[in-house]
Structure formats: structure tokens, C-alpha cells
Length: 115
Length: 111
Image 1 (cartoon, each protein chain N blue to C red):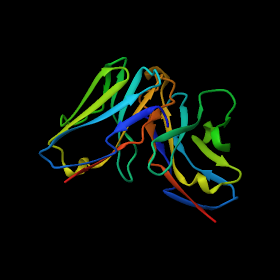
Image 2 (tube, chains in turn green, blue):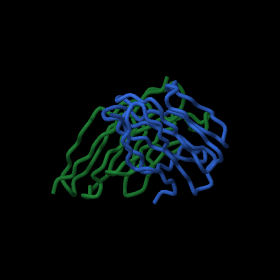
Image 3 (cartoon, rainbow over the protein chains, first blue to last red):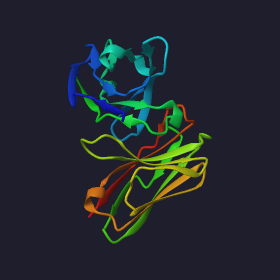
Image 4 (cartoon, one colour):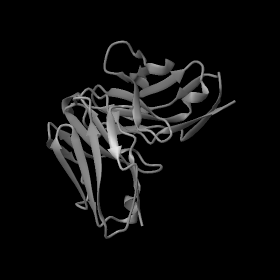
């Protein structure tokens, strides 16, 4: 069965500093991986996704993520964090043969941005 | 504005009440979803509808009853709920690409 682990419940980063959020997945076949963000009082929004090809994928809002099969990881990065990035971030894994209708989400990492 | 609208945004109900959550999408998507979001737990997929047909029921208790009259509307009918059902209920829609468009959620409190 698929599973996703986000080991960090909370992370605090200073504004302007770099960010890396960790995600590890467990899946037997080629994973299809996603990062979503949830701002306070909002639903989730897709930041980026990895299906195949280049293992470094670019997303919206200046985020990128790198797929590392050897480490079963799909970490999210941003070179310079802005105060508006404070939110909760969710990693997810899905299967193409279900039309991606059964995404499995991690527990999320809450990002706090300090001045 | 994501194109997915949920009402009500907040709902308080007793354990003997019957209420419904409503979701509407204006994106032309074929699939609609109900998710439950509780503190410190992963997002839980409850139901999936694809072209109005239910394709997934993730072992959800029968006190939650979904209804999808067409591809744009999705309801979650609630009756005899328990306090542990208090959570944020998120509706989403998609084209089966993995990009889900979520509504802002309905915050449910069961007393």
C-alpha cells in the first residue's frame, strides 16, 4: 500500500532564508508525487507534481522539488522564503491507473516564517 | 477563488440532527471528492464520484451519505453524527490528472 511520511510537523524559517520540507514515500511501482499547500482558512492548492522525466520539477510561487528514487524522497525547496509562504504543506502520492482519484496524503508540515 | 464552492462554511449540529453539506464546481471537471481533515491526521478520502457515479467509498460509516445529482454538484448528508466526526470537510474536483481543486471547506462541530 502507498504511504507518505512528512517527518517534520512544524518548521520555522526566517524570511529570506532557504526552505526544505521533507517527504518520503512508500510505493512499489513508479510513484506519481505531488505537493499541495493550504493557507489558513483555505482549501489545498497544487504547487507541483512529478510524473516522469527530469527529477527536478518547478512549481508555482517559486517552489521546486526533487525526486530521488534511491532515497524514496520528494523534498520541496524554495531558495528564499516570503512571509506569505506561511502555510501547511502536504506531500501526496497517487496512481495513474485510478485516474489519480486515490491520492494518499502525508500529515502535513506547518511552515512558520519569522521576521 | 478556486471554482469550487462549499456551503455552509461552518456548521454546528447535535448528534440527533440531520444536515447537509453542499459543494458546487464551475470548472467542468468529471470527478468530485469528499475529504475529511482532522488535526494531526492525514487527509482522509471519503468518497469519489466520476461522471456522477460513485467510484470510491473508503469504508465511511453510513451516517455519512453522499449524493451527486450531476457532475457539478456534490452533497454530503449527515445524520446521527458523533463528536469524533467534528472536522473540516473538504470538497474537491478534478480531470483525473492528480490536480485537485479544493473548496475552502465546511467546518463541522458535533455537540
